[in-house]
Amino acid sequence: MAKVSVIGAGSWGMAIAKVLDLNGHEVTVWSHRKEEAERLGEKRENESKLPGVRLSEGTQFTSDPGAAVREKDMLVLAVPSTAVRGTAHKMAPYVEPGKIVVNLAKGIEESTLMILTDIIEQEIPGVNAAVLSGPSHAEEVGHGIPTTVVASAKDQKTAEYIQNIFMNEVFRVYTSPDMLGIELGGALKNVIALAAGVADGLGCGDNTKAALITRGIAEMSRLGVAMGGRMETFNGLTGIGDLIVTCASVHSRNRKAGYLIGQGRTMQEAMDEVKMVVEGVYSAKAARVLAGKYGVDMPIVEEVNHVLFGNKSAKEAMVDLMLRDKKIENPELPWR
Image (cartoon, rainbow, N blue to C red; front, side, top):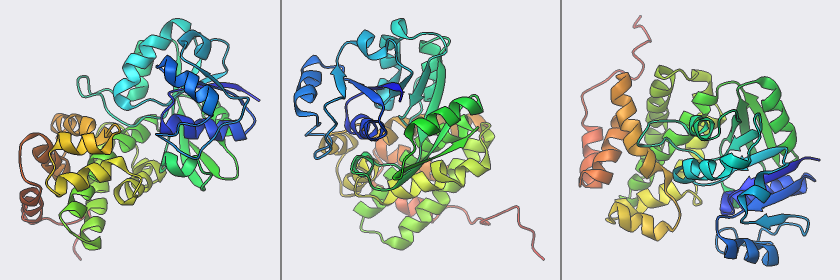
C-alpha cells in the first residue's frame, strides 16, 4: 500500500482516485477550493463533474497543499493543462527532492512551448516528474470500464513503480521511455479532435472522420519525431489510440467543442457550452508555432487555427483542406 495524493478534484482527479482507492492505497484528494473539499468529504462524490463515482470512507479530502503533499509516496497532478504551472508552484514548498509527481494533463504551454513535465520540473526543482497517458476518458475509468494507458519516466524503475501502483483488472498500464513523444501525442491529438468535431458539426460522415484521424496522426508524428519523439509512440496507445478515442467519443470535450463550432458557434460560445477546459484550444497555437519552428507541414492544425482565431468559417476550412496541392500519400515509397 502506498500513500498517494491526487492533486485536483475534477472528473479526472476523482476517476484516478477511484482506481487508487480500489487498489488499496491510502488516498488523499486535494481541491483548490475549501468548500469543494468539504463537500467532497461529506458526499464522497463530485456530483457535477463525475456523478455516480463514489470514493470510500477512507479517502481524505483537503484544500491544504501542505497536508496534501507532505509524507506521500507519490503525487498525481490531475489539473487542466492551463493550471499545471500554477498548481506546481503552489505545491513546490512542500515537495521533497526526488518525489515522484505523475502528470495526467495533456497540453503544451502556449507562452513557452514547454511540455507539462518540463514545467513541473521547472516549478519544483529536484522533482521526479513522470506522465501517465492514453485513451482514458474519466467517465469510463471512474466506472471501471477496461482502459489501457502508458506510464513514462526518466528511468525504468520509476515507470515500473507507477505501473504497479495503478494497474488492476480494468486499468492496464504499459511502460515506455519516450516521455516527450507521449506528452506531444496527448497534446496534439486534442487539436485534431477539434477538427473531427467540426467535421461532425458540418454534417460530414465516417469517411471524413477516418481521413482526419489518419492524416492527423501523420501530422502529429511528423512534428513529434522532428522534436525528438519516437515514431513507435505515435503508432501506439498515446498516439493513434488516444487520437481515435478523442475524435470519436461522446465524452470528448474537444470533439464536442469542435462540433459546436461546426454548427456555427464561436470558439468562446463553444467553450462556454462545454463547461470544461477544452485543452485543444490552448494547444492549437503552440502546435502551429512548433510546426513553423521545426519546418513541419501540418495543414489540419493550420486550418484549426484559422477557424479558432482567424474568423475563418468551418466550411471554408474544410474546402481548403480538400483542395490543397496534390500529394503522394507516402513519399518514402518508391514506384516500381
